[in-house]
Amino acid sequence: MSIYKSDQFHIDIEEQDYPDADCKFMISLWHTPKDLESRELIAIGLSDNMPKVQSTRNKGNVVESVTKPHNLEMPNVKNN
Image (cartoon, rainbow, N blue to C red; front, side, top):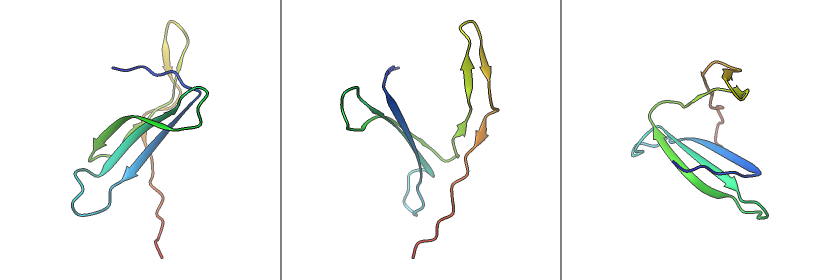
């Protein structure tokens, strides 16, 4: 497992909505390296299920849940 420290992380959840897709969702994790303005890909996950999101807080001796694990909703955008 790799550990990255960065000023900024970016998570993309891509719904793959075409017949030959290997899976329904592609999740990519990006970071912006210190002193650079580029965005670099560090991990990709593939799943047929919508990823769950949960917020937690580490208090040093215990990690507590701030929110329960929940699904994200993909916005419905109509293409012209």
